[in-house]
Length: 423
Image 1 (cartoon, one colour):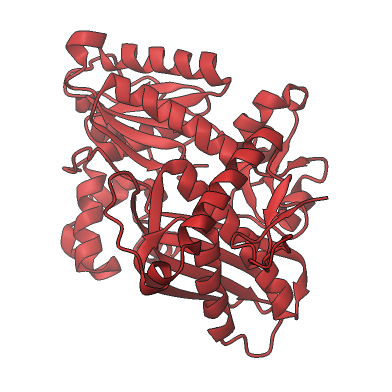
Image 2 (cartoon, helix red, strand yellow):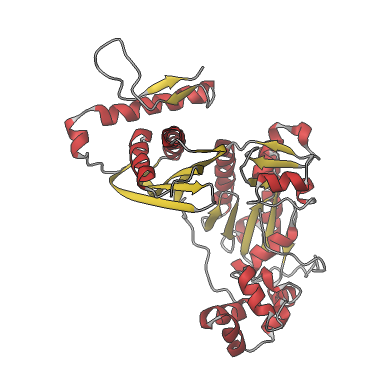
């Protein structure tokens, strides 16, 4: 969900000259919410919010909900006060990932120069595809049609001479639109925007600029660099001045891989008992490991996030001797990190588990640890968790779970996997 401010008075037609405009920004419209509407068509036209019902945050909202002021990252309690009639839908990250992967594959068929920047947006350099597929607006139009036909969701496309302006163009094209900003119209387009539209201008920077009487991109562009540097610092001042004049030399960098995979949960009531929190950590480790295996990657760094009742957030991480995608290994490290966190005697409101330092599993030269070399259970656990993945794929995600302790078996050998069937 884009948070960049838009200008209500901005022109929606800046001309048709596509020479020198080979950078395209594709941004899905209310992506998570749109994915949910494809399987719940009866909710179309209603204010729909994706997120945790009790004390979670808003992950996405339909434009009907946004009309009431609902925004991403807002607490669900605040969102429901603004829009009490909203329909709240729990997130299904596997669905979003699958749709995202399919859409990114579509982009890859247009050009090899695709830079994915999040699950629902990417930059493309289509300079090499013009001869084969046509002008950028033709390519963008066909792409939007294909995304809608295949997945029932919509995307907005911005086309410009560089990444910064293309991103702004897609924001102004929303929802379900396309905006071309010709190279010669770049500065004129930028001068219609509020200063908050520039990358790097957050609330504090916006306030600092306002103290100098700078509230629009036009005012910023007309201010000398020395004054801007006095207002916001030497590096930021020079950078913002370049952006205000449409200067952004960064190329589209293909091959960006997901940097981390994580999951978190906010409790309905704050938990005092760390053993109860550990059970949630196990479930989160299980979810993260399944996503790692599903994407064919392994992680080497385990990170834990803990938020206490006073909203203080702690993060702790540890790098393993070797990469893994096994939930049991992730859980054991995460549990130790949780135990070492200084909670100041306060109950826990939220806990999260994340794997970082990712690499592809295929072709990975694996060196067993001393523990793995002494016991065959390490690989047995992974095989058991792969079987768990297959069961979930057939019978649903809630059909089987990873147990905190080994389940009893008819022999004296303990169950290395620790699987338990959900009732």
